[in-house]
Image 1: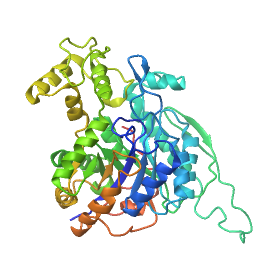
Image 2: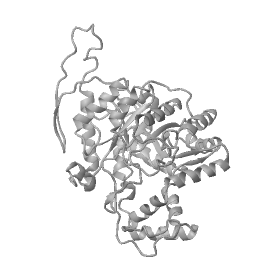
Image 3: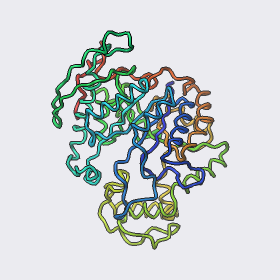
Image 4: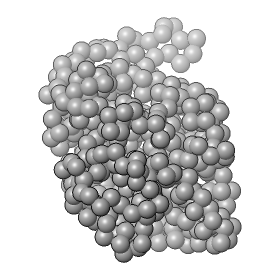
Length: 459
């Protein structure tokens, strides 16, 4: 039976984090980040994962102010957190579309070096013109090109990370010289003509670990060819089984061992001591995640018009949406829904369940996760470990900074009793603690493993 690991996903922009209750802490002060990451490290979590928001979200032409609206720069925040932690990984979401590849590689390598080999890059792409306009590049990247462009950015980053030979930079003052001046390199790709000279040695883990979360066929192929950890939305038993089978097939097709890509579904956990307390806690969380105003705004995004005259505790509008398809100004989760088709599905579900607007939004907007006592959730996770369907779960806390307390204090011991959660960190670097092999460009081929390509594959 395999073991399950945990990571924590501190989202960049979202409505699932309860921010308005007295129990909630600041979403921007360092103390919230420090408290959460040190709790995660006490619970032997593998990684602390920071999300990203590149533009303030908008709703019906106005700034959307009901959700968490952004946090400090991930690399800046993780560099500070490296100083108050020692083993947990530090995962920065950084957009390949809007960063210079050499500069981004240097900043990621800096975090990796300063943290002793605990850095990771959650590589994301963005092709929509709305986000691009914030960078004066609206619509410059075709949708079909987002992953070929990302592969170029990653290939350049790996060139930077590999450019300084091992042992070429002095490790102490007794050396006769600082080190040989690293040779520059030139590397031309479809999108870039790069001339660069790296200046940093590698960290103990070699390269920052590459995370990726694309779920389209192209995104899955990119992850199978290039990533080391894939962050998925497939957290139920059947969905995890199908996703694991698909990704392992793709990973083998990319010339890698089937277990080379670690799978971490994103999930929410709500833990309490009795089933009655679980019901009360779930109700409290859902009602604070989805306020009456949030429920109306959620439905307005589909209808495309103001619904402030509707009662959130009443039924859906009787008239049809005024738009054919939703836009991206509220984020990827709201983008490109076929409005009339979705509205009809919502009406059918509401009629079947007797839902009000708010009850519907709670149902469809907060479905993901495990709810129960520590023992009942631990029992639910045993099949995931027995079948090795996932390598871990990336936990989205519903409250900051105390949202991991019950998981660390109650669920982790229950998992350890079942032998499916570690009792200590196996190493000092993120790569060691995730059970990863050497970086793709720094492997010695073996008899049962295809030689590592000099550059990651394009898809």
